Length: 424
Image 1 (cartoon, rainbow, N blue to C red):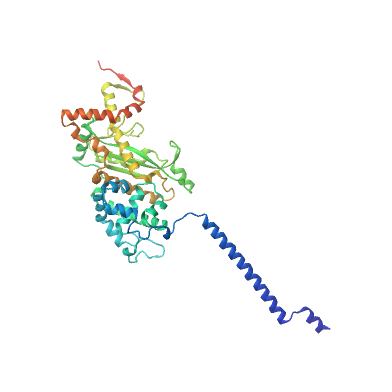
Image 2 (spheres, rainbow, N blue to C red):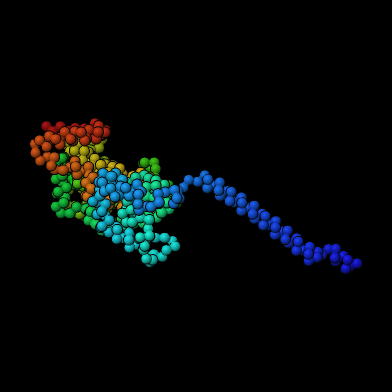
């Protein structure tokens, strides 16, 4: 009986094997069902995604692309319209160090050691293509999808080449004279003053103008940085910069990449130092009434228009009128930068201060290149002394001044509140 009971409750070896096989078949079937479901889900997701692959683009990035058509055409008009530089200046940057750096520096990649041997001939773009890609991006608001079609590169390659080229270009601009940002020395103050006085005789001593530039910045995931970049006056997140332009249109100082909550006085601390230590007596910068200059040592180094309610003589009002006109040169300089470099219209990266600094310094040094080599310089065109060399040209300048500054005078809502003191 005991033996019979044992046979009834314990399966035989054959029955045990059959049960195991059935479980394996069930598990395999369930796994197949899950795999099919995942495949259908991926296909459905891919059908609704918009992206470019290598097969969607032109076959050869170094041949027969829209960019290569502009590059090989070597027409100044086309170069300036797309890259902001003429043909000669583009080649100057290549020969000044960019091309050598492109061919001798490995592109940073996570799977490649930094000390690895560069292979420029295996890259999709040569040095001219890398520089062109970066300049296209800096001078426009193009998204990577558009750049991909112009350069026949997938977006991931666009991003990698652009960041690589940005570092190389800044390195090049720092080492060539045309890209430097320098405070005037010795006789240069008098030369810049003469440019101003030729147009505004009462501004004897003015050699430049200063103003703040606030650039839109994305909100940060870090609450501390988000608060630091919020500008209560402008009701938004910004990166603050203070720029000083000479009468020749060049930048002579740039304080960049400060949090948007900082006051101009704090951002401009280095400007104050330059004025106090490196600027001779009798020379000053033109600024607007909001620019802080309360230090005793700065009152003669920064001149601003009269404020509302101020008592002034007729001569002081004439001085203010010319100062307002000349201070507009800072606005022209700002517009030259923001209008040329379209990427500044897009919010800057809030979480990467070093990337913002890299971008801003490159742009401001490129502005120097455009002014000095390309000749795109509204300030110099206006403040050339040739306008006042003869009686006839003085008349031309007066007419030109009337055309250039009427909007400035109409917008000057403070002047109507000045109290004129008449000398007896």
